[in-house]
Image (cartoon, rainbow, N blue to C red; front, side, top):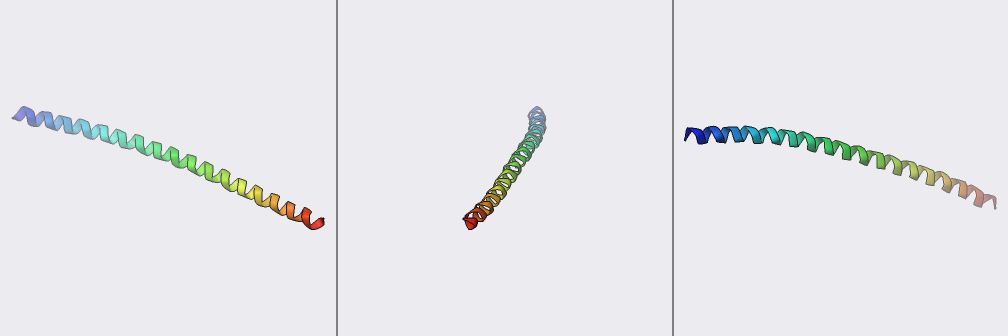
Amino acid sequence: MKKAIIVSGILALALAGCTGKAAKEAEKARAAEIEQIETVTSQIDSTITEIEEAAMKLDTIMSEL
C-alpha cells in the first residue's frame, strides 16, 4: 500500500512538471500568435491609409476634370 501511495505521489509530481512545461510552451505559442496578429493588423492599417490617400488623389483629379 505504501508503495502504491509513493508511486502515485511520484506520478503526480511528474505530471505536474509536464503540465507546467506544457503551459509555458502554450503561453509562448499564444505570444507568437498575438505578435503575428498585431503585425497583420498594422499592415491592414497601413493599407487602409494608402487607399484613403489614393482616394483623395482621385477626388482631386476628378475635380480638376
